[in-house]
Image (cartoon, rainbow, N blue to C red):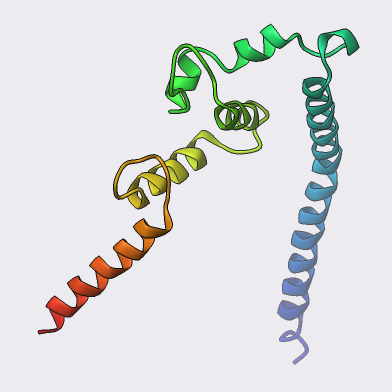
Length: 142
């Protein structure tokens, strides 16, 4: 009997074809990824230049950070101004460097940690939170 060894060779061949397909897919996507990175870099350079140097006018940049989108992203603390942090986050979202879902998750985490709702995480809050957790744990240990 020489018929038993052919199955192993077929499996190796199928595995090799699968690896080759994965490699070809990665290579096919590489130009798109490089193009996207070049476009992102150009967009960032465009943002950094003023209108006099071929970039967006300040009014256009401000327009990008105004309106309903800012409210949907929970970034707008005021209708009359945009803070530095709000502007930076809006630009990162617009450039798809972070997703709206990731931002929402981080914002929710901040709210959970901001025990006194001051909008700031203070060292006392973390110490107070640890003490409260210790007291709760101690009361459960009875």
